[in-house]
Length: 418
Length: 157
Image (cartoon, rainbow over all chains, first blue to last red):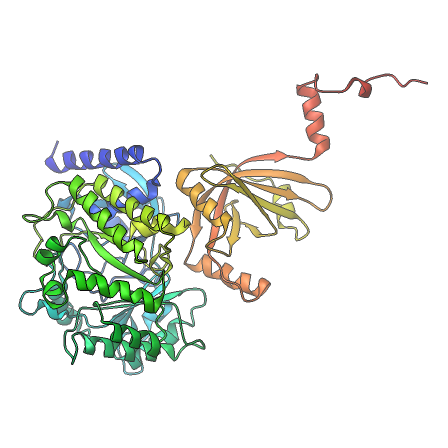
């Protein structure tokens, strides 16, 4: 038996064991977590069945893929319970799950076992159109099943001077995207408004916006230029609506109270997220040197708490890259210690009305942590369950970043029944 | 394992005068019944249930049912006294895509300014004829002790 086959067998039993070990966690969500953890590889049979007229193909993105290439692959998957699996193409030698085409349907498989039939995300109709200035709309505003995704700056200023977060490949991805597609670093707000207007014609498709991008440090106050850009963008988008406020999420730097107040008062923005990434000051300082030097862990946290006063409880969140707290050499030495510490700190956020949501750490090839390994499935099941339980305990909802609108956080998938 | 609904039951189901109610249960096995929702039969013979509210108890229970493989039940009462119960299991929910958008628009055409949370697909697993006459005949044949003697007695002057 080859080494590759042996590893596949070991991984499969881990999934089955986890489903048996955590009966209160839905098997579909455990599957999602493991698929995100290990990634997917599309078989040739599956790729042949992809219909670019129907299915959404990956275009512009803030982060690169796990195969380090910009290849036309399906954007992501949907499970039968409506859960999205936001996942990208992974080299087959890294032991990913397979997406195959079986009996006329796409299917997630592992080794010889068919685990679930899945749907590919469907392409929004505006993806086939160009803006009035001739830019392909899909290059400027991407989509999730119910969400417009808009990139502010696809460049992060922390990359300058090697201060980028160590798990992040935004710098490499930025260069790759510019070279291969010519997509601008920043979309023109007028063009974005035009695309949104077109997208809204697709009745029953979209429920929200997610606007995000790399940190922009420039301005009189730190991040002033970033804030100015987001205000201009949100105002342009808002022209499409009768109401001042419209369902929307901004994932951005940790802004000060004046900047947050401007965003709330001058735009239709309804929720604010600023990712603290790691819930431990010492690890944060090591893993996110740019964020640590420019704002600092305690101030980042304080600004999030202040944002609740402006946007309201249930409308502010922070994200972490779950598992990166175990990175070598300065991360936690055991999963048990990392889990205990992370959930304890997450509770201080929840108590202040700020739910913590997590992604699965993917050691991407363009990041400084590219040669590392993410933690076990057990770790993630307990982490995501713990974050969900904190929301339940503190009566916090996460509607703007849930299974429908985002789909990238197993903890918010669990919270769909709160 | 799913079963095929009879043509008679599908006709009854699609009759606008037929009353339908969906029963679900939560993790603590507390039941919840809602009547008057919009149901359809899909081309594959599954039951389609349109859930308009993300936060409804029914929706949460349907999510729990698909996660933890629990069954749900649908009561079907026809205008001529037909009375069936269909047990089934939720096998899929459409929250996006062509089918979702079709029912989103249909819901709004029928009900006005409403939203749609999901298009639930329920695979029938059992059909029970609940009309009293048929149930009683069946029970009397299978469990003959469950009868009052006065029903069997000779008429007295």
